[in-house]
Length: 585
Image (tube, rainbow, N blue to C red; front, side):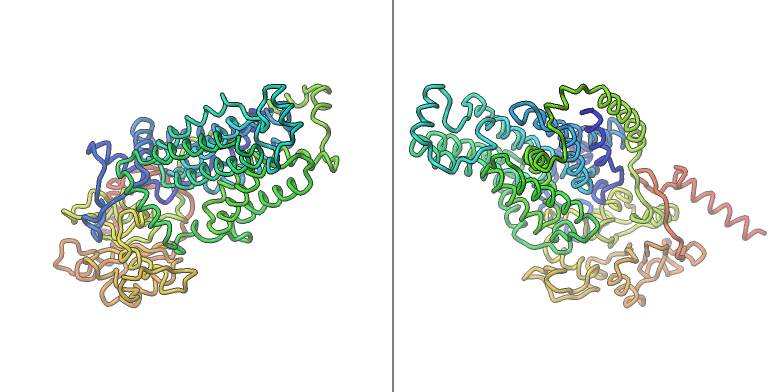
């Protein structure tokens, strides 16, 4: 039954849809493997040539690139699946050892894990954040192990003489900790070394770790008085070692300085950094976790843990402020709420006593679990075979058109498609010594603020502070500036982003449409693509202007191939043959 619960949770997080930055993450890792070095300046961009690049995702990208080189795209799906198995297994192992090592009720385990899996499924795509969420789950499991006996109790009152006498008699510390288990904290610096080289989310991990040890230090001092100073010194040392471990990276303390500077600047243009909307597409998932946590804590008869409550409150606040922090709160929920949920449900007699269940036999439960395992294995398999590039979300047909017609050049591409374009058109015959993309999802890691503002001026317009955050040194707002800066030749935009469409129509004396479908518009500079004397001239007969709906998907990486996987040049040859037959007839 535990295996069935685990597979059900992993099914929820096994969504096999391509992340907008997946192409870039794989490409940058492959570049490092091919060149044997980490690039220090911006690659693939013609607007930020020579600008410093602080890549806080090197290890994650090297992992993705290695997996693709060895196993192909399927390897990425298997890797993501295995990480979810690891995270949920740690939660299940912890749950089975709670309540005096009897484990929480099976139904409570099931409900908790499914609520959490549903809550983080939106964030569980193939991207470096996977490493942050996995390392965070490992970190909290480690802390639960190290502080077993200390945690799950309220330690904000001084030990009574009777308690001290009892602890001396039984040779057990008054707080209930194990000195040998606390030695497990030596593993934390190793974890933070890998974390700091995989994703910038290690900053949140360090903050939580230091806060956890700090709060336990307060408990030790309040509970033990001056006798707790030894523990406090130990926790201070372990916090310092964890921070020092994160300095072992290609940029040293420069990574930390950049992260603190970048995180201090708002980014309302990025959806995941906006406040959580409970009525939005994914807000209800966070709402379900929140309501379950409140119900459990309010009606539980179990003793509360001050440190756990404080950290859950901290991550809840951060999840409200920034949608992307929801998984941190969800992981805390998975570890620390089940015992309270069980207590609350027992209080209302919504479940039976777990000890009674154990004595009544478990053959029906085992049978149901086995049936679930078979069904879940059957339904999981298709999700581990292909990464979907959905045509109603990505410019699959537009990129196929460009590839078939050998249309290339310096591109202004809407934010979520830029890294797709980086990988699809990296061999650009019309750009030498520079890149071919104006701006992409690496954001401030390798673009100056002026370029960031230039792009979002074009995409979003000059909105209020809830929609835009412009740099103090950026030039005045001009939605068309990016169309002139460093002489771009192509513009690929989403028709759903009305402001960019308006900007292109406003500048139609300089630009003309080469391709259009329901989702995408591709514009080319008139002086090249409308000039009969230019070898890159595109006649009207080769342009495709329509409102054709975009349905279905292509298999990642979806580089200029037909839906049946036919190579782009073959598709182009077939199209040209049909056109020739029509003209002959």
